[in-house]
Image (cartoon, rainbow, N blue to C red; front, side, top):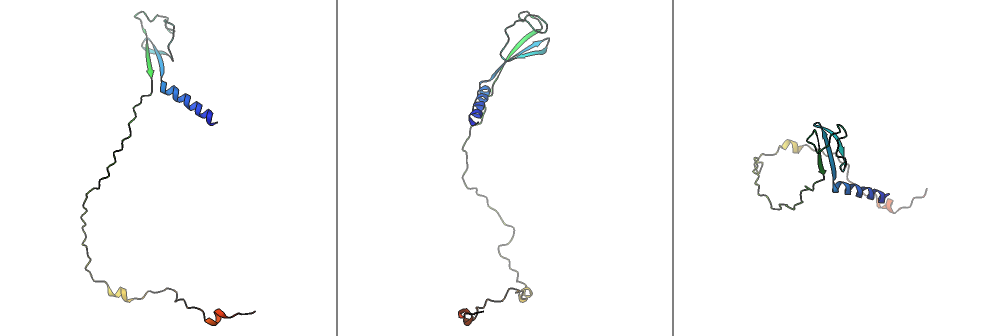
Length: 128
């Protein structure tokens, strides 16, 4: 399956990169037909006039191809340090005295300290 997909992708890339030649036929100022590679007949299929006469019919040949207008990658990375000074609007030290009433209240609601079990319980064997 991968080989088939790769083959189809290669064919599409080859078709797009090589380009397409079109012949546009105009009759009486309007587009009358489009051929992929050009036609061998010199007469118009719509009005029957030949193209050699200075009549109403003419052909335009156009070649469409994808142009390689890609931008090249450049490694322009600026690694220099910027020298921007930031001036703070607030003072460096806060000289206000702390509120003593907030410190005096004890808000300790933690569990009690861990106490080890007695030695006799740790070394005793209990039979039930």
